[in-house]
Image (tube, rainbow, N blue to C red):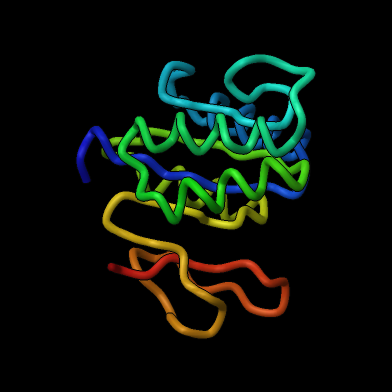
Length: 141
């Protein structure tokens, strides 16, 4: 995988997203490679409405090359009060995906892959679809 690979995942709460960042750091990922978005940490600072924070997240992710549909899903997650984590994992993309999986992330985007509805894919790159909890796995484009 390319050094530019960007994985984007949503977590049910900003605290769970912050925990994912801690786990990535503990696993040796560089801080500069990790992004954290929540209603309070979205570009432009806190005090914004959740919808405005979500829109800022979508703009930021689109500027990083994330497809519009995935950026919109991230914006929607932030607008709902969830946390979104990004990581440029390079050669360690599978490690990052495993950390996110272990923490119950909803995958929104990974370069070369897209989130798919539950039940439409079995496994790609070692990331099985998740069942029962409404979370998606990853599938090739």
